[in-house]
Image (tube, rainbow, N blue to C red; front, side, top):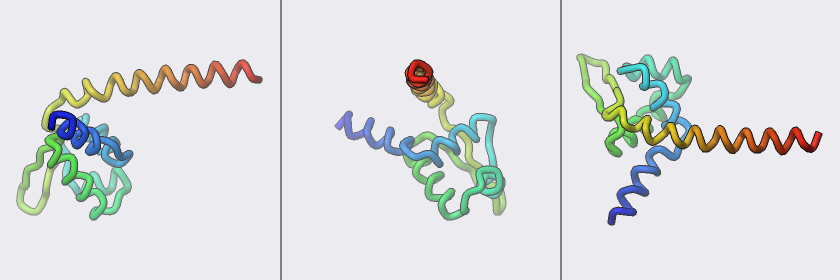
Length: 103
């Protein structure tokens, strides 16, 4: 059961648009309408991704009049994403060195 819970959580992160949303919200809360413009996404697609992230416990939302605002529920999500970025950075550096040795 623990592995299923972990798997479901990681699946929520396993989409480029969702990672873009998380990075976008790193700077703070934002309204859905503003995210549609800034992330250049269709509102329906954005809403689905926001819902997935909220259900996974990554985002929280609040409504103010006709606007819905989203923010990161727990900033520790970035403690998870940072090592992934570091691993990918190393991988790219290795690939770069390999390509340089070929040329």
